[in-house]
Image 1 (cartoon, helix red, strand yellow):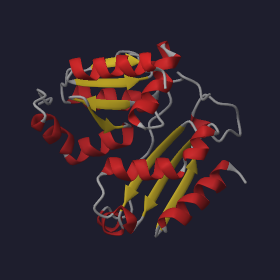
Image 2: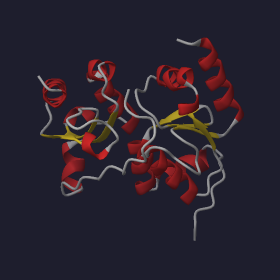
Image 3: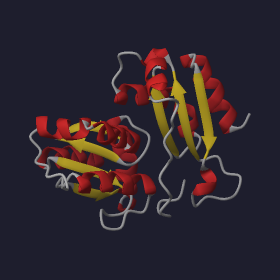
Length: 105
Length: 112
């Protein structure tokens, strides 16, 4: 299973998201072609209801603990409830460009 | 974890109102995520201490364990962990960051 698939599967199983995007953005960074080091996820789940942003991100970080241990380097995320996603009209945010330092290890 | 790193972090976040653990320096960030947080803080004219984790592998690993947060950058305000790049950007967009900094007694002078 690729890292992308395992991120997808684990988040889907743990948070029952109504919308889930897992985008491999490694090509935007100073890592070899085909790397799976930098990802962006959009998770829309009502499990986030009532949780502050930092707790939502910690929840996702914890779900992907194994992936971080195995070399996942950067994870940009948007964590929204169904209502928040609806209010935003489904708009997502782009990740910042790489600046070359601190290669994925 | 590395006790030396933990002691250093504790001391840094206690003696500085706003500390950003980042890659590169505030003037020359070496990572887009770090640069984005520097940009937000600069826009709000927040005085902060930038700490380059690339200079110290023990610190780079230590700060992840200290805050139980797997990525860099990491922002601390008055000793409290606020979040990483996504959280800081999102709070800035909603205006929540400025409110939070004011509540914490951190002086900000947003660009006119």
